[in-house]
Structures are given as structure tokens and as C-alpha cells.
Image (tube, rainbow, N blue to C red):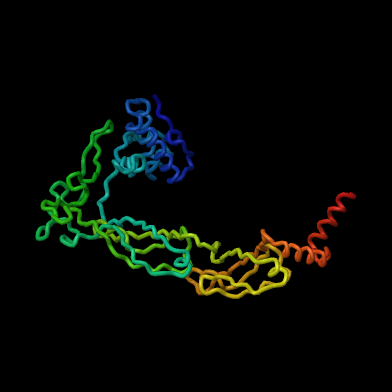
Length: 372
């Protein structure tokens, strides 16, 4: 059977660049690889064809000869075979498709320690003003007996005889395409390159001991519920001289009995009497510090909101503060004596309706709606 055109095999045009040819090859190789299609002779045949095409087109000199002579290069017997795959071998395929399991193990170098989480409960005022807390954090520490070496004091780890300290071993695997060499993590030492013949009795060969560490944490003023503060280097110790992880502190703030918080502003409902709303009055307004006096103007309507600048929460990492918003609610007395009722009736009769702007406007609109 005549060979197919190599460009057709890879599904690229004759003007395709090196990157396009390589990309097409990678996709087809992963799709047709025998390990993906066990027992499929057709896939195996196509896989060989794809590799042969890639060997010819990935090499500039071979590609130039193929473009000139096709499969019948004079004196060369064609382009058969695929011994080196144009510098793009099975290791790359295995690495892409199988997650690196066959393409080669990497030596295990320093690795950063894990992060820790700590949930910190705060009172509302503590979060608003800031506070210093001592945290007791359960975490690993480098073993003080062996200093993290994992070996009994006075002894030392021995070089792994299997991998000779590299942490890797090279193995040969027979496939339908011939023998393949792969690099894998040494199973004898787990990639460490060393064997602990006499483990440290204190940490039992872990190189770490579990304990509780006291950490002083300064809560920044203005922190809010649900925010996270990171303390660098206060997490679990790293592996093989790697840096420690971080401590993530999650803030939980208890609600306040009076205030509602939004960003750095405080919101507060204050009840006042009808007389205070009508005549105006100085009322006492609570803050996170000492109470302040605020003058409610006469004729204040129920639900009116007033703003006290700079009396709110300190802005995080700033010197400025938010505001307090006061919403006044006029409270109507429920139980009146006969004398009080009589006084109110006389007051209402003397006042008439001309002072009730909202009421007069409503009934004017109601009459207009009826006539319309």
C-alpha cells in the first residue's frame, strides 16, 4: 500500500510552521498511543504512521528533502523508521497524558509548609478599636532533639543504596515499540535520597513534633467580620529545609446590641417623644466611646435620619473614621389618663389641620382623584 502524504497524516498544510506541526503531532500521539488503545491494531498502525511523519517533518533538512522528492528520496530508501522522534520522545507524551508518571520523576527539593487556619472571636468594640490577643496554635515544630534530621542524635542518615542519593531510579520497560527507559521516584527512600536507619526517638523519624505555640497577634482597628489576616511564616514547617507556611486568621465579630455596621459607618435607631420631635430637643447619642449630645430640630418627622461625621469606626490601616447615622422614631404613648387625653384633644382642636402639611397634601390629592 502506498504511503500517505506526511502533511495529510498530521492534518496540517504544507506551509505549516514548526509549532503547528508539533502541536498536531502531540494531539494525535496522545489520541493514538497504544497504552490508550490496548489491543487496537488500527490505532497502533496509525500511531506508527504519525511518528514517522513527525520525524520527517520536524527536522528541517529531512522536511526539505521530503518536499523535493516525496517518499522516494534518491539513495535513502525513504523516510521509514522513527528512532528518535525528532527530539520529541515518549517522555513528553507520558508527561502530558499520564501526569508525568512515565516521563520522568523529579528530585524532591525544598517544599513550603502547609498553611494553618485559626478562628478568632472578637467583641464588636474589640474589632472596631483593635486589640492584642495571645493565640494558642496547635502546629508542628522542628524536632528539637534531631533538629529536623529525623535521625537519632549522634547518628546520621545514610545514602540510599538503591538510588545512590539521587532520589530517582532509571527503569527499562518493554513496549510494542521496543525498550523504553524511564525515570521514577525511588521506592526505597521515597525520593529523599537518604535512609534513616536509626530514627529519632523523640519524633519517631518525622523530624517534627506536635505542640502548641503561643503567638501574639495585634488585631488591626477597623477589622470586620469574615475578614482574614495572614501572619507570614507562622504555619507548619517546610519539608527539606523549605520555608514555613502561613497562619490564616479568620475574624468572627459578635453583633452589637445597639449598632449596625456597614463598612466603617454605624447605624442607630433612637426613639424620641412627640414633644421632642415637635419642639426640638437635645438627645444623648451613644458612640463607641463616650455618649455625645445631638440637637434634634423642631418639626422633625418620624424616620428622619441624621448624620454625625467622624463618630464611626476607624478605617482599616488609616487614621480616618466613618460616620454614625441616627434614625429617629417618634414613639406614640399607648396608655393615657383621662386628663392627658383631654389635653391632647384640646391641643389638636387648637392646632387644626393647617400645620399638618403631609396630611393636607394627601387629602387634596385624594379629592382630586375622586373628581377625576
